Length: 360
Image 1: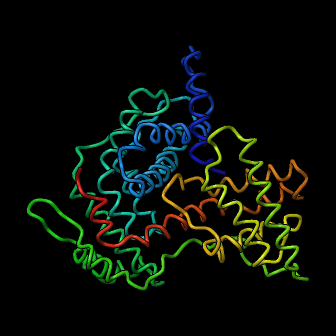
Image 2 (image 1 turned 45 degrees about the horizontal axis):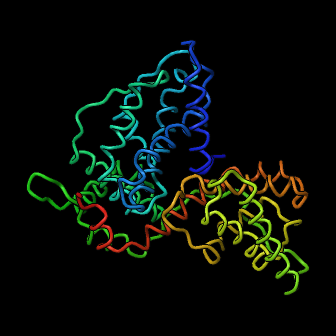
Image 3 (image 1 turned 135 degrees about the vertical axis):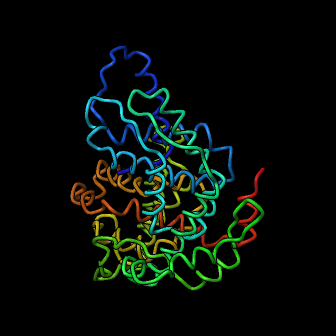
């Protein structure tokens, strides 16, 4: 489970304090959540006011995926007692290629921040005992070409085509990425109008969500029972916020958790005593956005907060078999985060995107 950004900032401050008193040079056992959370919190604290919220959210998602790729490509080194040298160019390219579940606007919004992310990780690596980076001079036109190619690949993937076969038998992907190009002197730009037209009517393909196949329970809740569940949810969510560390539970998270109570009651006829992983996953996949409107604010990691809330309810004896629910919700956090990001990105017009990527 990935924590939300506020919880990670709290953990980062605690970890920073511990580092001041650690004098031995031997690396501690590698903990991915601690490593990734530290970098995510550092990025938030140093960069969150540098960009518009939509751009920062895209950057935050990319950074999180990039950290995972860095570790995956160098797993044996990260988990041994040695300092890792990461080939950052390879990791960044792999991360973009693996971004198969993102709206096309995601890649365009990354253009103003890709260099900053590279520079951020290089700077952090200079002082980190855990890793350093190897990279080359940043070429914006090269990275825009990579992003155009990824968008072209995703276009065919969203249509259900066999991309590997397509690449071996035709030049369709390369032709399409050139169609997305608008040359501007020595600088390459995105032809946003063409990209929007090409993707018009296509739905981003998200990975299958396990257990998202529940049916509404019977007998159905009465109108009075639904109202009681909604009121109970409001009380519990408010208590959850009040008893958590100040600032950790955002207004957006509260709205999400209240939507969980209302939506499960109205759509799947379940009160909190009847909740299961399958019911929650089904609601997230099928009905969540009928009850909750996300905003560009600390989306990455928000889905993981559902499990933390369920733990709170379990402590209050309000849900049963928490461990079984936790095990059944392993994919829901990422699914929810990306679905919310895509929903917001899909609401941006071409004019919005042009304004967001303007050099300030």
